[in-house]
Length: 381
Ligand SMILES: Cc1ncc(COP(=O)(O)O)c(C=O)c1O
Image 1 (cartoon, rainbow, N blue to C red):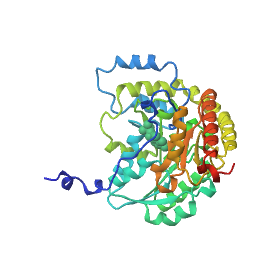
Image 2: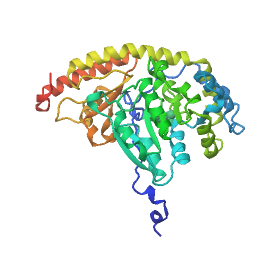
Image 3: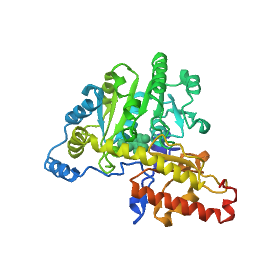
Image 4: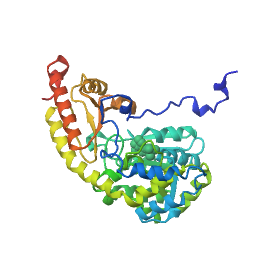
């Protein structure tokens, strides 16, 4: 018997998405490949976890009521606008399970977070790429999206976009949401990385879910509180969308510990996130200036707290840069997994001043090393 013949045929061409943030497996390396709060979790985290341990003897509240209330208060929406998830990753999977049937089409910008396309393809949906144009700072091409819109059921947007770091203005995102509403299409908006951007309040569309019936937004505690090991995220959407998604949600999807710690973090510790966002807003200018001076990459765009950097030398790939930096105890993300056009890109985040000094020094040494070899001959330095 060939088990493969019994599996759903949509599964056969599908590969698992590849992610950064693997630095913890390497000892003595500073991991700039993930986009977590560089201050780490708040100092009170161990205390909160130990309080939650006492509650492990019972099933979690299936409705995650207290956590959803905390999230609703934070975003000034109603708990009925909120669904909790085991990380926002669970909600990326749930959305197409609820809204996409076989052969439905979705529009997904490229490059963007790989989990969206994976989750849509799992439902047998077809992905229509909406290429982001490098010359325009990898901004959304709204006209190109509108042309494809009649064929699609939903449009995905990641703001700031992973991996490019581009931050779209609220005005542009609202224009897209309105156009989709008129056309009867859904918008899946990922704001998972937004709380760590200094001007997030001017950009976020969370409060719009009260007006826009077609809008679903995900966010997460993973990045903001640097707790990827706890699986806790949430979706904020129109009541109609949340109601549909809740019908399909796995029972007890969010554990006791995650609900308890998550609610406390959102209620009492958002200041920790804001401090990190403000510090990184300052640091990213310093990192950009220093790394631009090395000539290792095309000038960096610094809208966000991570950089998507094109290697200047046409002879070098992102993987080569990773290999040059690793002996200097710095890990950056090789972006070749986002597709062939991105083989010459790396992604790295801004961290605390001291760690950024290490990054800048390693980049500078790498540029000098490359310049002294034939490979660097065409670098513009
Ligand atoms: C843009 C974006 N959205 C969502 C996620 C999923 O994160 P989590 O499931 O930890 O909330 C990630 C993780 O890397 C991400 O980069």
